[in-house]
Length: 71
Length: 48
Length: 381
Figure 1 (tube, each protein chain N blue to C red):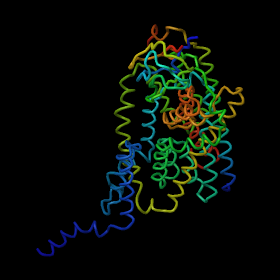
Figure 2: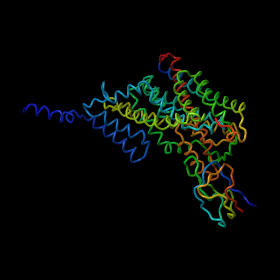
Figure 3: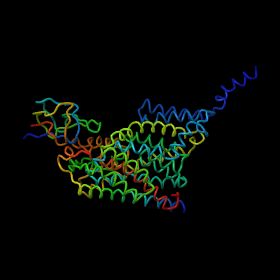
Figure 4: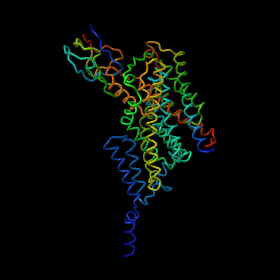
């Protein structure tokens, strides 16, 4: 079942740590976002394969916006 | 007034007063939000 | 001719011969503050002028804090009249976004709990023998807010202004070191792991504009002696939220804040004259100030636990630590700590609400304190 990684808050994507196709463990950092001038690691909610990355570095995101899909 | 009457009075009323005033403020915020609820698109439509 | 040469030369030597041990120590302390500001980056905007002011005022015979001295001029004009801290408050109001708090107003109570260190420290200060008003000045370090501490101590204990403001500003920058151990000791593993969902309560523009006006009226009515503090912060915020006086808002948070910060820092440094600063009392002030901030954090976290219980485990008690005025350092500490225990925990926005509450809380606590003092007849008004 596909799981969406959602932005936990308003902010900006700084860097993407994983490539599409990579295996990710639960709690592993998928990307890093910036909010209130602070770097916040976004972790994988489940173990699986990174199917899709929907954002790119520098992009502003809203809370709950879909960032990536893990299957 | 002796030191300890002073100290305890200021400490107790101070803590209670701070809590009370901020609690009232939180109620006022809730009231403001009730009277002027957010409508989607409002920020774009209404300026100033 | 010969004697004229000698007396002329004496003018150049007399400063050195008048240099006492106290001056030397204070010059070293001033240099230490400069080191912390420049090399370590602790609040450089304040520590650089404070440190330099401390050096200047301890040069023998320069008389900068005597009548007609240039530091005395700024001190009398801005600190004794309390104008400088108030101008800073306008800038703070113009910079602060209260949106996270408006979205989640219940959290404001954490901002009250985060001030309890002030009042608990008052009792400690009285216990170790401080006079009533001196104890008030020591306690206000617990507001964890520079301008509030300066405002209150310049009113009640101007001779302690240097120690109080140095303590307030240095502990503020040490918040990331002071808070985490306390947060860990007071919470259970399970509490620290609580995930708080998004708050989805958008706030209308009307509410954001009315908020500073309503706060000013109600809070000042309840604590009239604090009206200058509350009023200036809220004026700044109204200018920001109304969006119609962009120029005034920008001047308040840039030019005015910068000029006043420079002069205020110099004046605080200038209160650090050797005979006033080099006392056992100063060490006590620094020690009690540290305890005050620890107590703030502890009570904030404990109140967070209470709210956690009351809401059936929906609130992570860690955010209670952000109920102090150190913005946004404290909220960042909470985010970092929370994610240490649960990678999927994003507390930043909730902590920001508490932190904004702490900013209002510190001003309200000072206002309440001033009004209670007035009520008890300790200060006139």
